[in-house]
Length: 98
Image (cartoon, helix red, strand yellow):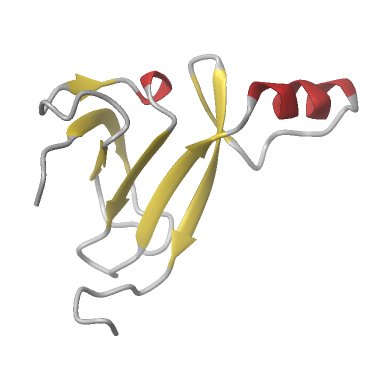
């Protein structure tokens, strides 16, 4: 496994509720630094309890502006700092390919 940076974010698994998932990214220097979510465009983890893969992708700021101008409710997106992120979950992904 290569180097990565950690994300300073602790949250429960949205699938099974397991406590305190640890996130990482390869969007920065990959020097085992601790970064804030808003410092990167993508970060991810897997839940050891249920096998879900959880990935956050930053929304393009122009798209967010378009949504806000049109009055779209952004409640379905996660907000870190000044950025909005889409959370994608792949359920029950196991290293064995199950």
